[in-house]
Amino acid sequence: MTDSAPPIEPFAGPRLYCEDGLAPGATVDLPERAARHVAALRLRAGDALTLFSGDGYEWRGILAAVGKRGAQVALRERRAVDRESPLDITLVQGVCAADRMDLVLQKATELGVARIRPVVTTRSIVRLSQERQERRGTHWQNVVIAACEQCGRNVVPQVAPSTALRDFLAEAAAPGTRIVLSPLADATLRTLRVAGPVTILIGPEGGLTDDERELAGLAGFVGVRFGPRILRTETAPLAAIAALQALHGDC
Image (cartoon, rainbow, N blue to C red; front, side, top):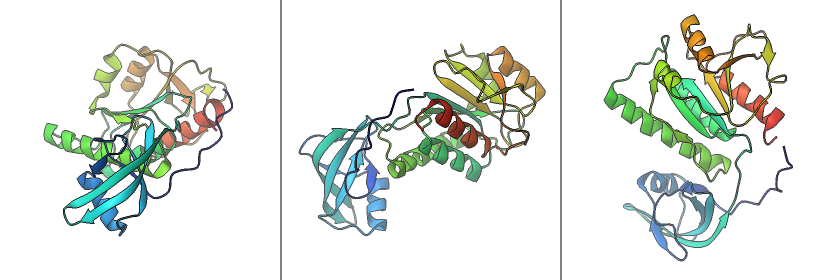
């Protein structure tokens, strides 16, 4: 691991995600979600803010107009700011109750996870129809975007559509290190040899079944012990990501 670059002082004002229309000298209409945020903060024309679209750049902007129908921002300076972790982490998270899932997505984003794969397991309490899956997927992506606005990331982790765990495990294994937390495992995060990207598999409330753990092992996942205690589904991924960052990432 190399020394990280010195921190860059943020642009003034709140950070807002705006996917389209960012160009030098442009005045852009904020999307509805960002415009509502501007209204909630009671910002006025002339106030400073920062826009980003997820491509690694951020823009210094000035609020040009605020009204009932939305808000416009005049763009000034653009700069590339890399606040990504050198450790490429994919979180494969068993779908859990709404508030717990939102917490996992939010905090995993703040901790630097690169992508998130929600999976439905045997013990998943939440079962979604196709329509509800699409709505929930949009909601999850918005949770991640809001976390990026707060924590300063200019690259937005993608939340993949939820899929069955067995279907995910049947995919061709990605290169790198694949781990699943288990209080009975011999290896620990400290003794684990990390090579390449890291994929972390976390079960939902109730954990993974023995069959699912066996399938995960066949798919290249190695059991890792994270202390003798059993962690909740919303605690386990955040503790593991934070520890991995401290041992092998950007901490």
